Amino acid sequence: MAQKIRFAEAPDVGSVGLTEEIIQKRAYELFELHGCQHGHDMEDWLEAEAEIMGKKQSVSAEPKKDASTITAA
Image 1 (cartoon, rainbow, N blue to C red):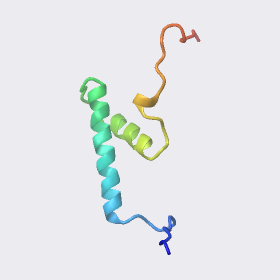
Image 2: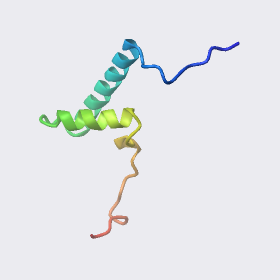
Image 3: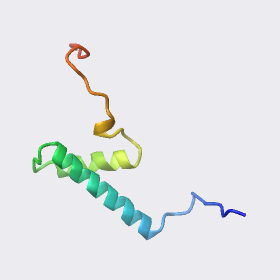
C-alpha cells in the first residue's frame, strides 16, 4: 500500500532550505530582468517569494500589454 503524505506536519529543514534556495535563484533572475539595478534586493526577494509560494504570477507569466490595450485612467 502506498504511504500517505501528511501535509499538516511542519516541513523538514531540508525542504525549507531548498525553498529558500529556489527563492534566492528567482530573486537573482528578477535582479537581472530589472537590468541588474542595485538597491532593489528586498523587492526582488519579496516578489520571488510571492511567486514561489503561489501568491503571485511570475513576471514572465504575466500577459504583456501593448499600446492598443492600455487605457487612460
